[in-house]
Amino acid sequence: MGQRGFFDVQERLEGVSRLGDPLERLGAEIPWESFRRVLRKVRDRERKSSAGRRPFDGVMMFKALVLQSLYNLSDEQVEYQVRDRLSFMRFLGLGIEDPVPDATTLWRFREALVELGLMERLFARFAACLEERGYEARKGQIVDASVVEVPRQRNTREENQRSKAGEEIEGWSEAKRRQKDTDARWTKKHGQSYYGYKNHVSVDREHKLVRRFSVTDAAVHDSQVLGELLDPANSGAGVWGDSAYRSREAQATLKEAGYRSRVHYKGSRAHPLSGYKEALNQKLSKVRARVEHVFGFQENSMGGKFIRTIGRARARLKIGLMNLTYNLMRYLQLERNKSRTLVPLAA
Image: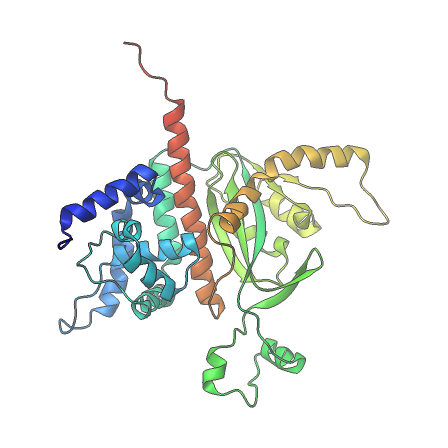
């Protein structure tokens, strides 16, 4: 059949485009170069001398992490898929002949982001891009939290208690300690137990974009993080949330900050909700439910809310990337909706 050349690969990519490659739009419409200034810190950290192999491009490595988050892949799976799939290679700007970062290189790059604390700056950089394109936070904000699981620890009850207290556990080797996540916690939701962290988010009502987020262990109550989530840049004064935020302290926090509470009322066995408050909760739900679309997308379109990390710092980066990746995809949808509503000029 002869040796395949550049035009054979190009023809294959054109076929992928005709079938509809979502990564093609993601690669073309997101201002990836805007992240370079933040990512340069990683290169400065790694490049201690001019000897050795030239490091991979920082923006390309960051895009690989976005791929990982979008499809919930392990480091090894990212390496395999980039080598195997033309759409992944094109998204990263790689050709058939180009070297591909292996799983260890990807891990080291992500670790550098953790150590340098760059997740917040990357998130803020895209937030600035959104505002430049007219997607300011408007019409109030919706707060909620979702459990993000990590691999479960098979510890004894005594080991768990000592781990929570920060004590050294006898019999654990150094290698075993590195594999134990002592920051994650158990929680129960709808009668089911989960082990991991919580992704607390604030979403603006108009555009349904994540504007602020916080990561805690799974045992932290939602209302304890409310103050961190409130976005003063939002032009609306209303704050929507489920009944978990209906506490005296949380309501005081909203009032002191000048917000109008749109939080669901909470009944109890001794004091059930009145018909009026039940009707009001139903009305509030029509707005509050928009935040569920964020978690639903992460669960159903991004391979699920499960991360393979150890420790809160790494979990914060992975969950931050999850929220940023959602914003990237949401931005594409908003741009698509905008183009559909444009009325063509008369001839």
